[in-house]
Structure formats: structure tokens, C-alpha cells
Image 1 (cartoon, rainbow, N blue to C red):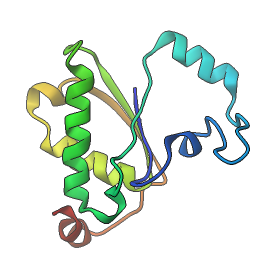
Image 2: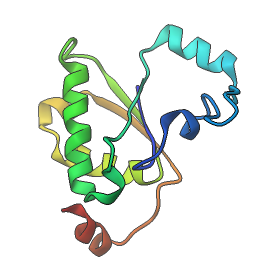
Image 3: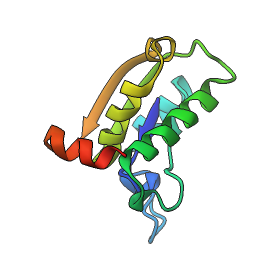
Amino acid sequence: MIAIPAVGGIPDSTWGLQDPITSIRSCDTTVYNALKNEAYIHFYTFPEGSSSRPLGTCADDLLLAIKDLLSENDKLPIHFAAYSTGGIVLKFTITRATSDLANQFHSVAFFGVPRTSPRELKNNLN
């Protein structure tokens, strides 16, 4: 599973793993511990400065990260969880993936992804 925060977001605070200020774990650790023993979970972090870059560039970065993750096991099924603008970036990433790579994408869960018009998306893509 690849968990994608909002562009410029912090995965730990986005997914409730640990409060960055108090260092208190805030998620249900029983569920998290069960998942981490059964599946590989990668918490993606956008490169520094991504919040001021075009979403299309962020999508290219994510696509490269996915390819790097798969370099060790290129037949691994991939499930995504995306939050906020990370969901928009994931949508762009999926459209840019080759068919061989896209065939490994098994499921997507979007949380709080903003609704935007196709015109707004096109303007932010590049």
C-alpha cells in the first residue's frame, strides 16, 4: 500500500501515526500493527518545495517513486490511499503510468480530495 498525503503534507500527521508536536501516537495502534504485519505500507513524502510546484511535476515525482519501490518486486499489487491534493496528484500519476505498471494498481481510496473542474486541473497540471 502506498499512502499519499496532501502535497507538502507530513505523512505522520496526515495518517494519524504520530502527532509531530506531542509525539503521541493518535491512531488505533491495534489496526496499524495488524496491517503492518500483513502488508508493506509505504508512507510517501513529497519532495521539499512540492507545494509550490505544478501538480503535473508532483505526479512525475510520485510515478518515479512508485517505479523505485517496484524495482525489487515488479509484480507487487499496489493499493493506494490518498488525502486531499495528494489524491489529485495520484489521479494524474495513474493517467501517466504505462499500461504494464497501471495493471499493478489494484485499488484506490480517496479521502478529502478537493473537487475541481477539468479546466482548473488542466491549468494546474503543468
